[in-house]
Image 1 (cartoon, protein in one colour):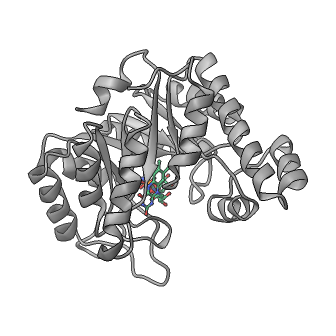
Image 2 (spheres, rainbow, N blue to C red):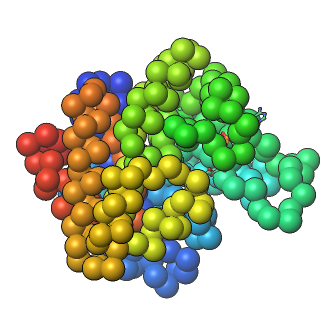
Length: 289
Ligand code: FAD
């Protein structure tokens, strides 16, 4: 199923995220994670591609596994570390396996690399245009409510975001954010630039103290005082931190839905137990399946 069929309706959708294994030997364990996550009946499941030092080798394999559970898969595809030929071969593999949905990303530019080489894409918008030319895919892209770290201003970033939409990006998934007002402001600004495709709000349940430090150093996310107080108070107590992190993410999702943001993506990080607890908290708000 093309995800825009879901995302263009007012129906609430909650999706989950998986990352693939680093080694083929781990694939069977990861298939069990897919099954556990699928049992929660998310609207769709996305599978990352080489994110945060992980691999890109098993993204298609895991996306195929998701679809065996009759759940649409969204396969991520990045290009900054690949040649155009490599990207074209992954597109062919997705096509051969009837995976219709791709989240097209530039990826982070590898350190100390000459970028871009002549056979590389410079921006996600170029990748999006080529995916569109190479097959009948439903293509999504990333957006950054606080601005992408490389952009000088949010408005400059929004101009580039508009280029992605014009190139064929049919929906957007946001970087995580911890204060919903940041998303509401972003959506307003995006609309003024004519960006009117569905926006899926990315929510990260932060359930341990180390995670928040990593997130801030990687993405430069703003962490509101209300959340910092939780980390200060419960950071050294893993069970309490987990419970508070799940409650905080649940609260963010309820506020989003109450304010008409109907599509939420949970950065579940291969943790079906955490996704399950959040969905249980929303049992009367989000009707699964
Ligand atoms: P782009 O859209 O190309 O933007 C990158 C920067 O370039 C921005 O600052 C933008 O303003 C600027 N720019 C764009 N076009 C132009 C132009 N024409 N001229 C000048 N500047 C321009 N990473 C992974 O490795 N694997 C994943 O699976 C993955 N999944 C992600 C999922 C989501 C929802 C998000 C939000 C991020 C994900 N990332 C992933 C991280 C992402 O790859 C990085 O944030 C990367 O730095 C930017 O990718 P992009 O597709 O947003 O790039």
